[in-house]
Image 1 (cartoon, one colour):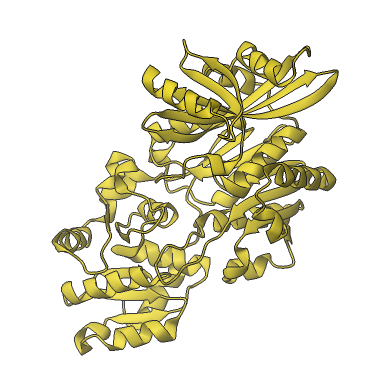
Image 2 (cartoon, rainbow, N blue to C red):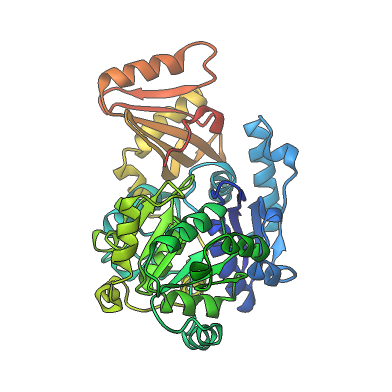
Amino acid sequence: MRILFVAYCMINNENGDSLIGVYKRSLRIAMEMVRRGHEVWMFCTGRQDYRDELTTQAQGRIHFLDFPHRLLFSRSEALKRRFYRSTFHRMKLDLVVAGEAPLAGTILEATLSAVSLGVPVAVLDNAYCPELAQAFVNFHGPMVDGLVLTGPSSFQLHNPPAFYCAAPPYIQGTPGEAVEFLRQLGLDGGPLITILGYEKKAEQLALALMVELRDDCRAVLLSPSPERSSQNVEALSESVRARIRVLPPPGENLLFGLLHASNLVIGKSGFMQVSECLALGTPFIGIEYRGCMHPQVLHREAAMFVHTTSSVLPDQATKEAAVRFLQVPKESMRHLHDQRFGASSVVADFLERLPKQPRPETLKESERLGYSREVLRKALAVRHPGATISVENIRCSRLRNLNWGSIDSVAVLYRGFGSARTAFLWGRRYASESVAQEDICAAQRTGSGRQVLLVDRERQLMIEEDAGEPFLPPITI
């Protein structure tokens, strides 16, 4: 197969709000697909700012697709979409894999373009708990042909549909290397803390906690800047710094072993790091950052082993959580995960099994969300006065959940004037008549930049042309 992975990467080490998880999980699967003989492409904005062992391995094995900046930041949605569509058409893709739910930016545009060309689409995202996994199936499933949700086994959906893949966390290995490594470092006695110091804030929180914890606690600080981190450790008292070892980020097998051997991990509150630790039976303390994961979204039996804070200076609650977590026996967390790992192989197997043609069931799934053939035929009749419209398939995905209602992306494959066409629309569902009236009036106002196609007041629904991301509310976490 010729496969395109679409991801993004944002680096900001100063503030601790780097976002690299979407890129890294896409790379892991992409490398496995390359190993199996597939031709793999990667489209990831911001990738040039991030380097590690995995990205180095990917160079020369994966083809990287880059779009001109002037196009990515163009104000013309029509121009961007023509470029995406023409590029994908020339590439003759067999599958597009979106690294995250298609909510905005390049991932949304790539998903819609693939749908318009009849290229199957798979989406990678997270299973935080069974209830949210079900919501993901309900609201994003109708857009895709494959849905891969990552998380410990207890977080996954029970009795999932055929297009759902329950992937374990993207970490694998054996503990033996880490056990010997810790012995060589002189850290083989007393509780062990692994510090994922990939951002400064996580390192600052962890070092401040080390000052407060019991004297027999040992720590391994993994840092992309070991010299800088070593200087920070040297500023601590002699008794504390004697219990800390600073290392560059290790390979996958050693990292697996360190997380497995630890009694506590401290890092940023990102789902990938948190879920990996929970699957290995290790509690987690996380520093909050932009787009962070809050423990309350997790499966309730797992949330008790995760604590987050916004301050690099540990408050009383954070200190108490650290003391409590260091006393948690591994056995008490075994029910969270079935100890199955090897996510890259699990997902690669699933992608290879996907049908070569888009699945037709999305039509009925979209209709259940209120986007029926008849409603969309009426909307498209406004776009094409006098034409006979035949709706052949519908795909939809939730873009925003808001306090007044919701906005869905609706892709309609139809025939009009004797030719096959695709329409990208928005469906707005309103929580009340008053809210609907206010928004509909705003949309119909001259100069609004919006084009209303249909208003169904009985269903409190409005269908309008997809005007592009500038007309959407911002994504809120």
